[in-house]
Image (cartoon, rainbow, N blue to C red):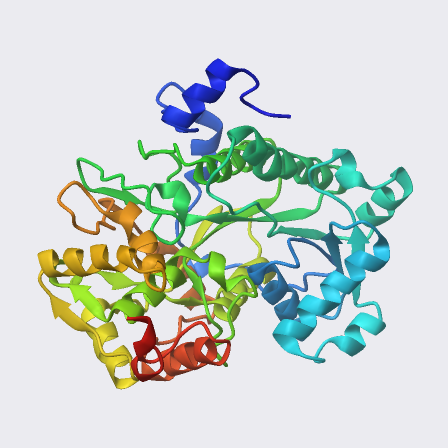
Length: 439
């Protein structure tokens, strides 16, 4: 059903879009704040590792979900029940197997055949996940932990759709966990902070510098973006359920990137905003001088999954929210040198020269994608602006993970060589000598 059923409402949508200013100034955060206050690190009382047991995993066909699945299969002995949406049980199983084969080849074929991976045909956006009563009860009796890695990650559309996909679905999982006393690991995003570079930068710049910690929820950040707003509302629902006895943790994910081991990236790579920007810069061959003091976060996907699972194996009600983003950031000055050594020379130019070159790319069909990648990131001074003035903090999470034996790997030439090689092999990156005809 359309959310703009009349000519008048459609006209308003065309002129203003789905960008109503959302304010949470008058919202009661008492329950959520009580739970958030738990997040303090006491290394002398770190939780012990325990077996997860049988796992219910939603979003298993996604980039993060399928790597969580792989980590579970490598380190646990139980069964993982993967909720997959599809027209039939056979279609769901084929979809799951196709994606496992894309990311891991035949590595998990035997486990699939031995039913350590059980595909459950269902739909989080429907009552009882679209499972009949018997299947629902059977599943409820088998699992002790739920990891919710499912979400609609688009950034445009009617909020009604995102609320159903990313909020109501979480409430159904909360109800499931309450019925079964299962633990819930809810996957969220650091975009709830208002710092949205890794997803879809909305141009917001805070008047004052703000810091977003693991014990923060609302710090006056903008939540006009429908995706970020829905993920924020889902977090609030989980926190309030925790105040009423739900056993849960929230993992806010950072900029998920290619695998550390071999450079493999998500199957739908074209939809990744950060990757589009990197490709645009490499193809243009220029960097504006005013951006040289910013950094890019690369959080390798299997390392992110490992961090999530490390915390899950050490589950504790004493802690609530974790920021899963690599601390091994790469500043543009270093990134420029790495890419140049890898065959992608990048020239640092004054801002006016960069803007002029960017506008010229709009004049040719072969380069207009570069213009389209950056035009919405330009401010009123014709500068690309990625600084929202909101600083994401993760010292608590880093110290917690370090105490559990996990450390983020270094990101340098070895990683970026695998990164560029993968995208060259699939035809997404092309070195300068192979793309002269386009410029």
